[in-house]
Image (cartoon, rainbow, N blue to C red; front, side):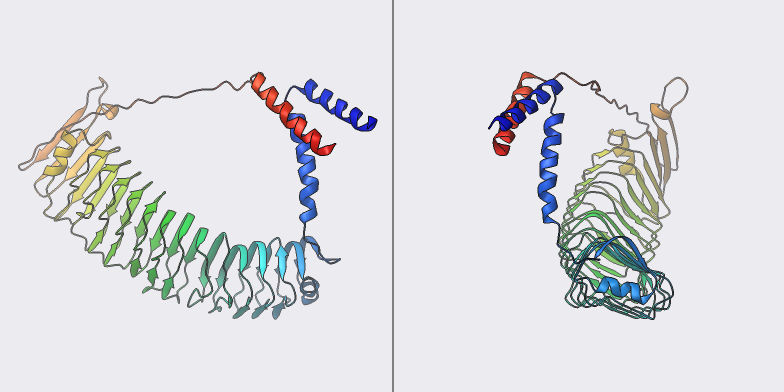
Length: 440
């Protein structure tokens, strides 16, 4: 009892002297750390790999002999005709197979979990992958595998953070049964004709680029994403996508049409560019674009009247094409500049009115239509006297200038440490008392 009292008194003295929570934080950290380390998976002798590189089959066999392996395992070089990890079930770390140019088979039929990255890359003759039981992985990467036609995921991935397939010979994405990912990329896989995924959300980037020229993309369960990039796709179905928190880009596709029927908010920019076959698209309920809007170089697109409910654009607007029709019936605010160039029969009348009403807040307005060219710049880019400059040339139209000013506010907070309040000290004391009761 006397020992406990001395320990408690010493601890309390140290706490008061410090007059901060630092001592308590260190104490709790030591206690929690000692508790959590007991949860480390038990492993066989010789199965802890700090940073292990295998260049011959015998070294790979030492990993395969471990039901559970801990550490980063790298397999590389031309010493393999096949890579066999039969036996290992769990790897708590990364497994990277890179540059095994002579290997034709990667066999890991018992592997169920890789907590970090499982990467197979730069193996130009690899034709077979067997990951029959793999269900859980941190990040899965297949890259530069031109001879590989199948993922080898028999049971299928049900838990992952990110999945990347680039520059492979894959013909399908069988075995991807994940509903939420941080990143999902499928790029430069010339033989993938269909991408049909049950993916529901992507918290960072969804990118589908330059696969088969006729690739069809079905993402009908997708409801939200941060950023989306679609390039070189022939058809697209995203019937349940309601929110894109970042940017949406559709560029260099062979689509004739596409539709985002329930997308209501776009947090950043929208880019629709260089889609040579595009004739129409739809954003029937989209209300807000948080960044810029760019519609350019779509050779067969004659209208951009596909935003019936769009009210605000948080950046600039760039419209360039052979337009005969184009309206934004509910648009009342454009935070940036406005630039429209049309070689079709579209006139500038409605956009000049929008600018005159003050809806366009940016410092530049330019519209080149069928019967007029109208340009103006506000005081933010005006002459030396601070006056706006306005020019207009037209057959029957006139130009109008607008000016817009913005004001910002900032707040600062002292970087010095404030003295602890009575409430803080009382709180620290109560927490310390609780820890003391637990220890003694």
